[in-house]
Image (tube, one colour):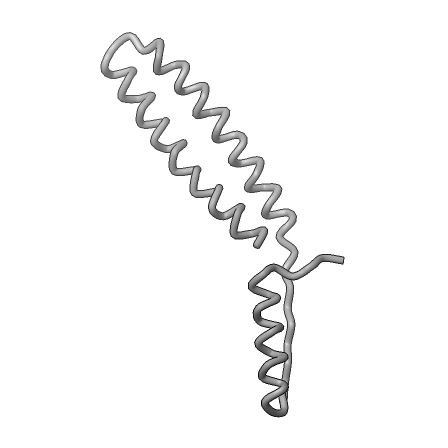
Length: 93
C-alpha cells in the first residue's frame, strides 16, 4: 500500500471540507505508478554523471584549444542532463 503525497493529502482534505459544506455529486481519485520512470531517470542521471566525470578527466589532459572546446561542448551537454534531477524529485512527490 502506498501513501499519498502531500499534494494528494491536501486534495483529499479539500474534498472532505467541500463535502461538509454540501453534497458531492462526483469524486474521482487517480494514481500513477512512476516506479519505472523514476528508475529510468536515476539510471540516466548516474550515466550522465559518469560521462561528465570522464570528460572532466579528458579536459585536464587536452593539449590544444580545439580539444578543449570539443570537451567543453560535451560537458555542457552533460550539464543539461541535470534537469533529470528535478524530474526525479517531482516524480516522487
